[in-house]
Structures are given as structure tokens and as C-alpha cells.
Figure (cartoon, rainbow, N blue to C red):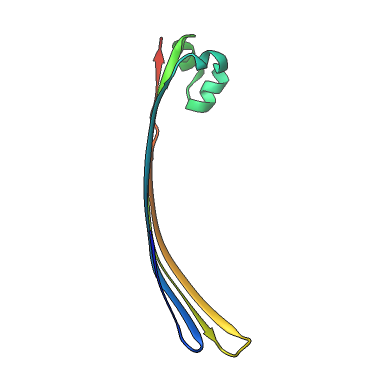
Length: 113
């Protein structure tokens, strides 16, 4: 959501406004047979930070449950002032203050089949 207010005079323009946004999403899924295609110890070590010993303990038959969630919030106030010094020369001053917050969660659980 954005709200703006603008006004003009003989030799100036002024815009003031506020902005706010909130967004969230989540996903939850389970994979199983897919890992038979792409399973290599190197890939599992790279993706999960697992040690080769941990990969060996999984065996050949395993799946994973992945859950992701994210929340994002953004707020801002802004303004711009334009002033005509002459008919051919204009000076502009603009300011913006923003505050952004994001939280992300992605636990992964590996299952042995």
C-alpha cells in the first residue's frame, strides 16, 4: 500500500508519502524416489553440509521433508521537493527512510526408508 500527497506552486512541486508492505508464504513437501536419481555423496555434502560418514549411514533408500516459511515487512516514508530557480534551472531534494524485516525458516529432515 502506498499513499502519496502532492502539491504545486508557481515555482515548486512537493510530494510526500508513506509505503507499507507485508508478505508471507509457506511450503511443505516430501520427496522420496527423486533422490535415487540425483543421490551422490558429493551432492548431499554440498546441499546439507553432511559429512561423508552421515551420507553413508543414510543408505540407498531415503527421502526428505522440507518446510519453508518466510515473512517480510517493509515500511517507508518519502518526500521530494523541486524548486525552479529559473525557467531553465531546477533543483531537487528527495529523501526516503525505509525499514525492512525478513524472517526465513527452512528446516530439512532426512528419512531413512
